[in-house]
Image 1 (cartoon, rainbow, N blue to C red):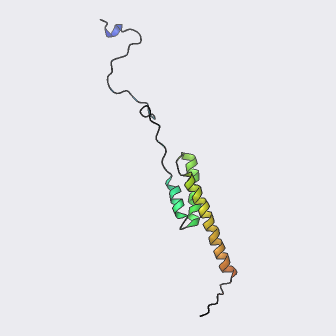
Image 2 (image 1 turned 90 degrees about the vertical axis):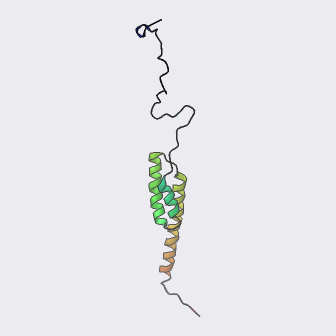
Length: 109
């Protein structure tokens, strides 16, 4: 029988508990968790239907955040940019028509 001082080379101590997992790694066989959704891109898409200018601003900010953090939601942010831009163009056309008309509307009963 050998004593601890006379252990052969390559000897491992008996199993004493769970193995230590390196930080950033999960159990074997599992992929790392996907980054979450960018909340600002969701808010930008919802606001595109109510306040188009806010949708454009939040869309640009969320695209920048997504590029920096790697979160999900880039299609939502781009959709918010497109819908917000179309909404802004619609508002500009509406007010241009009101101003060009001079505000003189005739009503007949």
